[in-house]
Image (cartoon, rainbow, N blue to C red; front, side, top):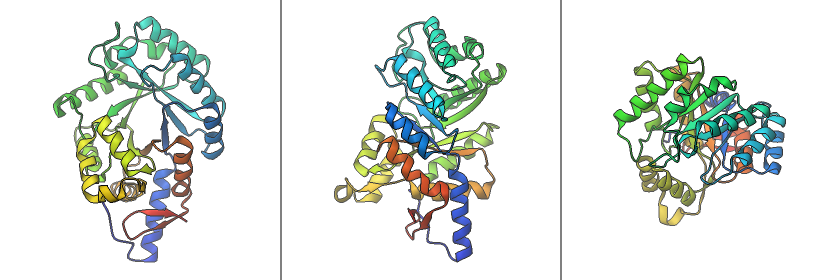
Length: 308
């Protein structure tokens, strides 16, 4: 993770804290299987309408995801359920799933992912075929998240990633559905900033949510990185961290957040927001995020910040 020296003056420090607070105000969180109790606690911690992305974990029953989404909406949060295209047997199954989500007022925003399996389980080939099915508009979907990969993809070349993303964004636009990009988590601000520059240079100005790993142990971060194919920034993280001595040390994404908040503010990129993967637990991640959201932080000389 990039580090910066401490602020050179009190005024500079206050400006930097203000940039961090401004950037973190619209933070979203991602959870795999939050319980009803965890959703209740999140509703008490986060601002009304905060986005909670609900992962479609392999083997997870659709009705479990539907109940979690409906409960999040009832508690004043904005649920963003994942739909894993290749795991659906048929478009009829997708249709029914979206109908149930809409009945619980939880179909307005969705995250579409391929599903990380080589062959579709049924007739839904990929995300693009799901977009082109017309089912999103039928059930009142207004916004759709698509995956972005600042650190690359373990099984796809850059050219494929670019073509797939641009094609899906265009397909959504043609159907009157807003597209946003939610990135895979990254451990280094450098690849994120370069990827954003690459994106804007191609005329893509869709909203972006930058994926960051929430607070947990360094070893957990690296384990998730290996499983998800985030190789480059994970190797850089390990080389800087003294891995053997600090494997179980608690870590948080504050240095990346501080750098991104500063750089994005300087560039005027107002439609880029943070997205936290709750690897250390959804409640712990939400509580950690409160301090920078409120500006209740102390900037540190290693380029990060601590709760005040």
